[in-house]
Image (cartoon, rainbow, N blue to C red; front, side, top):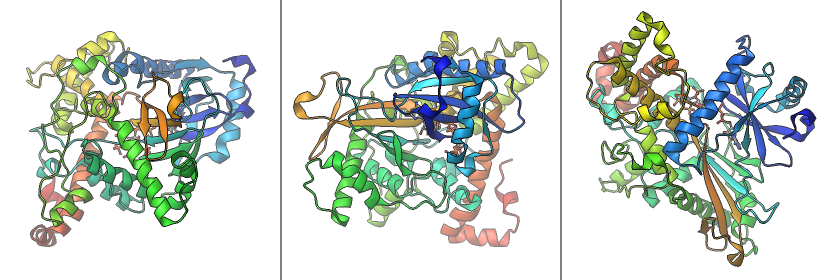
Length: 491
Ligand SMILES: O=P(O)(O)O[C@@H]1[C@@H](OP(=O)(O)O)[C@H](OP(=O)(O)O)[C@H](O)[C@H](OP(=O)(O)O)[C@H]1OP(=O)(O)O
Ligand SMILES: Nc1ncnc2c1ncn2[C@@H]1O[C@H](COP(=O)(O)OP(=O)(O)OP(=O)(O)O)[C@@H](O)[C@H]1O
């Protein structure tokens, strides 16, 4: 990219999260990812460069090992003319959702990350301008904690996502709870995955987005009350799934198209398109802990129908969901078991602050950092080294619990599909596809106390307001004890 010739008119607003803002090039398949900060949090250019370098290194040296070379696009750092960045910031400001404007795009350093545009990533390299469909899923945590450090039994039964939904609705983050349960998506069972994906399509929240030719056509832009319009979605998708127009419109057509979409997503999520180094690592067996969540609507339906055992077919080892889950499961102790170890590291750093860099708390995230993550022992020998390894593994796990999966699909005809590209079939069409993972920024060491506090809040809210209402005995107990937190708070 010729940075001297950067023109803000060639770029447009693409999306943002809590930490970064992304703009895409109007013609080329690239995006720029800028960091965001609260107003008045003045970071120096050097600090921002260091932060970005850490993100790139972490993707390159650590996450590629866990997820595989093809799934991770670590990108590169680019230095841009400040004038271009300022003009770009002004240009995109009206496009930004209000709820994200509590932070400002960094316009002072001139540094950004340059990445392939994964919503337009060409899955078929010989043909340009081929239509492309892209589905982005933020699956969240796909397992129930198996750690013996967990103090509340409910955490062994109901997953964090399902519990957190109630707190989010109560806090006004979302208008309605979602029926999506990550354990269904990660189950590998097609029926459960189908249910999970349908639930995401019903209530996308920030867990699902669909792009057509790089443009967002479905999913939450800003409005917490955004209504899912499946007819509108089907209208966009019809040329992809029924290219010869053999399907009339109407509710049946919409349902058929949505079903085809769910089928394609399921098949691509279960496909294995890459190998990785950590694949050889003896990670946590998925069989540990419960494979379903009691709060899942799919599970409740089964129980209502007299079936008490949920099928979990297990994920194929090479697929991205499996790798994501394995990385998530590096959280072996749960935040309750991890927090005392964090405190041990903290105490050590208070006594020996100069050790912070030796311990690689803020990087560099290099090969040596990765090697240290491979020790999976849970036997605490009381050392700072043990505590630190668990803390770093926890940070990786948290990152994997918050990353997104991007599936790009491009229609192809039977005789023109490239042998190098995987293909997925639907009843009337076929697609080449690619699967990638994004937002792999390592969660900061400093966020651990917040995680600990939030975990307590989620569980206490659920116990007090949801479980107690479902359970008449608990409910009367709460009525008798006005101050419920005293009864239930962890000591
Ligand atoms: O804690 P959670 O599970 O609510 O996850 C946060 C996300 O909320 P979600 O539940 O997905 O709506 C949250 O997503 P939103 O900004 O709400 O879209 C962020 O991804 C946040 O990451 P960070 O701390 O900004 O790096 C996420 O925080 P981390 O816990 O990953 O640090
Ligand atoms: N390489 C990419 N190609 C296409 N779109 C991208 C790319 N990277 C990010 N995006 C889009 O920009 C959005 C925000 O990016 P990202 O998730 O990295 O932000 P974040 O602030 O780090 O997120 P979080 O809120 O989870 O911390 C994504 O949800 C995705 O839609």
